[in-house]
Amino acid sequence: MRITEVFTPASIAYKWNEAQSNRIPYLGEGLFPAMQKAGLDLRWIKGSHGLPVSLMPTAFDAQATFRDRPGLEITETEMPFFREGFKIKERDRQELLRISEINDPYLQQAVANLYNDSAELIEGALVVSERERMQLLFPLNGNMGISIKANGVDYTYNYDPSGDWKTGNFFELTGQAVWTDKTHADPFRDIRTAKKAINAKTGSTPVYAVMNSETFDLIGQIDAVKNRWLTVNGLTLGYLTDDQIIDILKNTVSITPVIYDKQFKDESGVVSKFVPDGYVALIPDGALGQTVYGVTPEQADLYGNEAAKSKVAIVNTGIAITQTVDEHPVNLNTFASEIVLPSYERMDEVALLKVK
Image 1 (cartoon, rainbow, N blue to C red):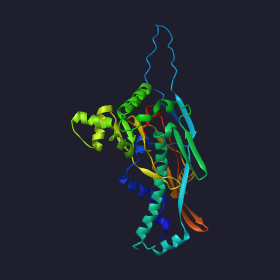
Image 2 (tube, rainbow, N blue to C red; image 1 turned 90 degrees about the horizontal axis):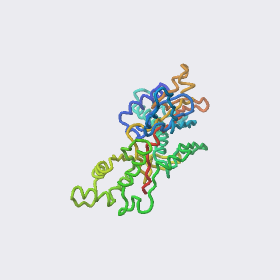
Image 3 (cartoon, one colour; image 1 turned 180 degrees about the vertical axis):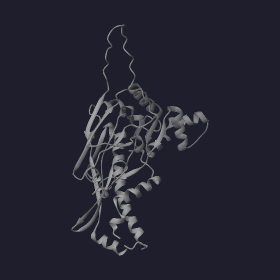
Image 4 (cartoon, rainbow, N blue to C red; image 1 turned 45 degrees about the horizontal axis):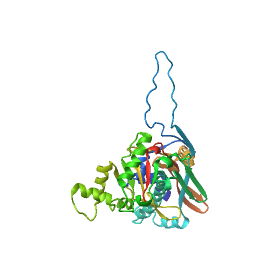
């Protein structure tokens, strides 16, 4: 039995899909649902509606006037490409040949290790898309866009070239207003201010506040929040529980906190948070955009070719798993590749607070 008969793109995809029932999805997967399109160009329309405008009055027998379409902004860009792989080298192949009998007790573990390596490639592809989505949801200092730089490649995208989003949707707290000032900070005021601004601009009202646990913990230490609980309940508490803080925000400013603490390692191995400390994103209900996958060269050139189709499998909408064999030296290569970039149609309905 050859390893290429057991360890194939199809079997990798099957194992991955089988394991999905136990996987905790990334937050961005729900906020930016996945879809696939041909080509590299991403074209999307941002916030074309906003507040409803009353019809123009007119006289009988008069021609109708035509209204402009204010706020219609078409964004078009080229999506980035990502690819990485691992090798089963000649020495590794020799070790596998020693346990090539189907009833060998070590075969299952050896093949499982190969699947784990493949799963890491797929997870790395998923990290890319979540990283892009969270950079849009939490643009540092209000600079709306995506930036991934590594391996001599610079993928930088500006989603707010006019600066309108930063001017109207980004709220940076300063002085005694920052949430680390337990005596003077007022999260209720800050959230209300941002909600009103979004509602006045778009007619939409944020209902969720996305943050990490470090930022969430700041809220329970602020006097204005603790006093709100004491006033309602007549209790003396040294601290508030998480559930109490959530109830206070829901009942006072009609916002439900969403705590998101997933982390990732960047290309240099540095551990980073998807949601940065000291930021709160106020978002409406429903999807905010789409995670758009392009068709990779592997999918375009091999997946549709009957002779080569066995070398490629597609997982998670647009991640291509490919295998090749080098003849000299004899190596089995497994690759994961993707072309992916989010659209952000509802960005004007999202507010970002920098609270620390």
